[in-house]
Image (tube, rainbow, N blue to C red; front, side, top):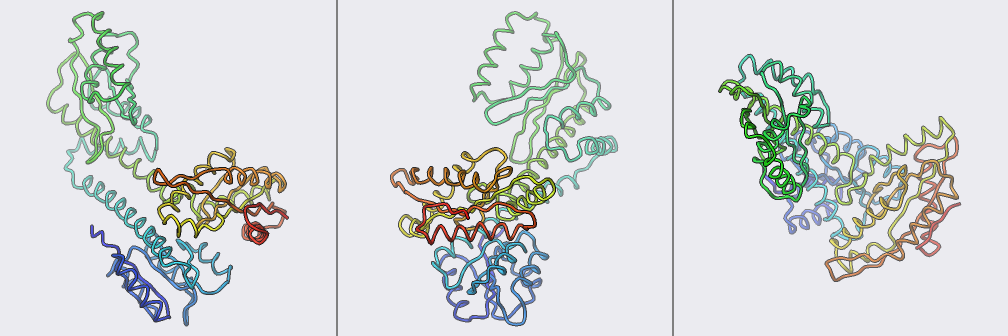
Length: 469
């Protein structure tokens, strides 16, 4: 895949187009500019951009309509909206329509523009890689030559495991399916889980210590001895082996890697007294290949799901998800009359952090602040990156006064916190916040606006404070 970054810039201001094109060219990003609205579908298909910079106000057509067109053509393509107008409704409508971010004109800093666009392009490239990998797996799967037995086997396997996200469930049902095709006494798997390992045996072999020794030794022999857990198991095996009868070797077995192109998920083995034949080994190999493909599908699904709802920099929920979560909480409060508050936080003078220490330091501050959010709030609270250096916290079962106290405690903690960067630099920051509580009849936009207005009030009153009215 061509990894050179390409972007589109759509704006009716020639000067802006020229400046941005030259700026991005100097930073290694190829920019195609449009003063008039192009044939969006044709241009995207031909030039394959990784991000789009789009002005909200354009002659004859709203930039938001162009945003919606782009989202229909390629839902994964990030669109960054630009505006020189203070129209908050259009900004919110842009984000609601799927905008990646909003940039105010004139730009505070071209470095900030580069930072946002570059992050968006990187996110799109990573998404394309995931899509390509998924297509590659599907293509490999489609081109495999399966005999009638294997084809029937594969269909039943897919029918049984469905869309489960639990590898243990896959293994348990794989055993139930495999026993219809092969004769064996035990089916065992050793799954790698970080530095830990997990051995599962189907069915329960009870007190058959000889079979247990055969299973453990055969599967452990396939694992490089690299973790403390593995060393302990090896020692236990050595102690147990001395006490076992010598006829443990009466069991025959075959073991197979459960692996995809670039990942080993674990190992599987079949065990019985009679020897295994070549055709049985072929079936078992194919069987384990299908297990690996299923586990790969589960992993890819989880990665894609995580990317879709989490902010790429901080790891907490992104704007789209946190707003949807707030809609759900508002509906719950409306239906059951439960308490609900929200708090919007903003880092005070965050531009000074970027200007003084650089954008990487700014990123580090945002990342640590997000970690502090996750560690400070309750399990039922939800926090997300609302945009830039703004964060939105949803506080269910909380009235406005208690919401204020929650926000104030967090503000005090941040005021005392030291943010380290590069091993030497230490950065001090403060935050301001606005709190709002839900009252019957409010919608999400009104609730956010009240909190946002209170945030601006906190800024006006001198920053480093929480405002609730």
